[in-house]
Amino acid sequence: MATSRPTRRLYALFGLISTLVGMGVGHLTASLLTPDSSPVLAVGSGVIDRTPVSLKEWAIKNFESDGFSIGPIDFAARNYDKIVLVGSVFVGVLVLALVAGLLARRSFALGAGLLVVLVAVAAGAVLTRPIVEPLDVVPSILTALAGVGALWWLQRTALGLPLDPRARSSVEVAKAEGARAAAADRTGEPTVDRLSEGHVDAPADADTRPSRRGVLVVAAVLTASAAVLGGAGRWIIGLRGRPEDIALPEPTAGGALKPLPEGLEARIKGITPLQVANGDFYRVDTRLDTPVVSSDDWTLTVDGDVENELTITFEELLDMPMVERDITLTCVSNSVGGKYVGGARWLGVPLMDILDKAGIGRGADQMIATDFDGMTIGTPIDLLRDGREPLLCVGMNGEPLPREHGFPVRVVVPGLYGFISATKWVTRLTMTTYADTESYWTERSWDTRAPIKPSARIDTPRALTTVDAGKVNVGGVAWAQDNGGVMKVQVKVDGGDWADAQLGPDVNNVYWRQWFREIEVEGGQHTISARVVDGDGELQTDVKAAPFPGGSSGIHSFFFTAAS
Ligand SMILES: Nc1nc2c(c(=O)[nH]1)N[C@H]1C(S)=C(S)[C@@H](COP(=O)(O)O)O[C@H]1N2
Ligand SMILES: [Mo]
Image 1 (cartoon, rainbow, N blue to C red):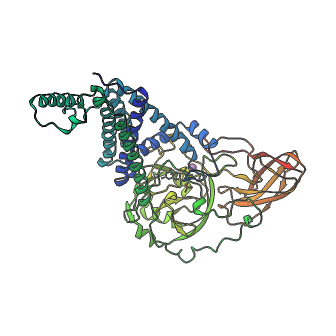
Image 2 (image 1 turned 180 degrees about the vertical axis):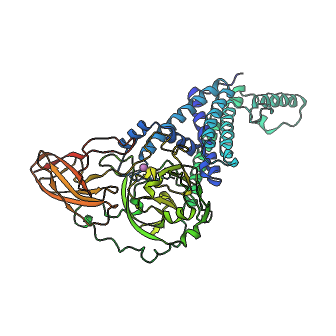
C-alpha cells in the first residue's frame, strides 16, 4: 500500500517555505548578534559590492525617485537602486528555493544539498566582509539547520512518515496496531478504543495516507514562523538602531555661524530648500541596513605614516574645538539634474587639528579613512591641506548625526565628491600612499582625485510636466564648491539666448546657491536649460559625461508643456 507522492507543486512550495524559515531564523539570530552577520543582508551587500559599475549606474539612473511607498514601507529618495538590485537577487534565490523543493521530491539529500549550497554562498558573503568575527558564522549555520529541518518536517509530514527516521512509520505502526487488535479480537482481550471506531477495518490507505490537513498545518505554521522570525529580526535591528541621546557641544567661540537667511523656497514653489532637513537628505552608501555604532565604543585611531599614532574617544573628540560650517555634499554618482546633492550645516572638529597632532609623514600622499566595518575611502592629502577645511563631524543641522549619515562621526570635505572624502561611521585614518593602498571605489576603477564639477539643476517646473501658459518661474540650485562658488546661473528657453537668473542668498563658496527666473511661455512644448558660471567666471562645460569615473557633466535640459 504505497503512500501517494505529493505533487511537484507541493514540493516546490516546501522548498520556498524552508528557505523563508531559514532566512527568518538567520536574520533573527543576526539581529541579536551583529546585523551584518545576517545571511540575507550579507548576500544583498555582497551583490552591491560586486555589481559592475555600469549596471549600478544604470540602476541609479533609472531607479532614482522622489520617494514612494509600498504598503507600510517608505522608500525615500534614496537606495531605490539598491532595492531593485537586491530585489532581483531575492527573486533569484526564491526561484532556487523552488528548485530545491523539486529536487527534494527525487531525493531529500539533493534538495537539502541545494539549500546548504545557497546558505554556503551567503556564509561566504558574511565571511568575506572586511571585518569578521568568529560568531558571525552562527546565523548562517542556523539558517542552514532551520532550512533543512523545515524541509524535512514538511516532507515527512507529506509522506506520513515520523520525523525521527529511526522511529517506525505511521504505516508500520498502523499495521502493527492492526495486527495487535486483530489478535486481541481473537483472544477476547479488551480492545483499544480505536477498534470500535473501525480504524482497523477501514481500507488501509484511509489511515496511513498522509493527511492533507497535516501538511497544510505544518506549512502554515512554518510560513507564519518565518514571517514572525524575520519580522522580529527587523524589529530588533530597528530597536538597536534608535538614535542615541547625546548632548552636542556648542561650537567654540569664533566657530559658530549665524542662522541661515530665508531661502528662495519661501517665495518660489518647487525650489529645493536652502538647507535640506536631515530626514530628506540624500543617502548614498554601500550598505543595506543602517549601521549602529555606539558612541561609547567609538574610537578614532590615526595611524600609518605618522609621527605619533593616536587614538581618541568620542568624549575626547567632543572636548576639542568645534566649528559649524555650511557645506553642500555631492555624490559622484549624481547624474546631471540628479538628486544626490544636499546642503546642510555641519558641526565638527577641523580635521587638520587632529592630523597635525599625529604629524603626517613626508612620504604620505593619501589618507585612507576606514569605517567601523572596514569599508575604505581614500582622500588626496594635498587636497586636505590646501585650505579647504575638512571636518570630522558630529552634528548635522543642529542634531547629532543621524545613523544613516554616519553616527557618531563622519568626515566632510568641502569641494570633493563624497566617495573620496565623506566617510561615515569613520573609525580610522591611515596616512599612506596611492602606490601602496587602494580603497573601495578605486578598486572599482573610480577616480582617485575627484573635485566636484560645477552644475546647475532645474527643480521647477519639473521635466515632462504640464504647467499653465504665461508667466512661469524656472528655478533650482547650482553649485561650484571647488571652483570658488556660484557667480551666475543662466537660463535658456527654447532657441532663445542665455539669460541671467536671480540668485538666492550667498551662504559661502562651498554651499549651493538657489536661483530662479521668471519666463513667459505660450501654450505648447518647451525646452528649458540651465548652466552655472563659477566663482572664477568660468562657464561650466556643456560636454556630457557619465558619473563614472569622476562625476557627470553637461547641461541640465528638458521639455515641459505649457497649457493655454
Ligand atoms: N562608510 C561609508 N561612508 C561613505 C559611503 C559609504 O558607502 N560608506 N559613501 C560615500 C558617498 S559615495 C557619499 S556621496 C557620501 C554620502 O553621504 P550621505 O549619505 O550622508 O549623503 O557618503 C560617503 N561616505
Ligand atoms: Mo557618492
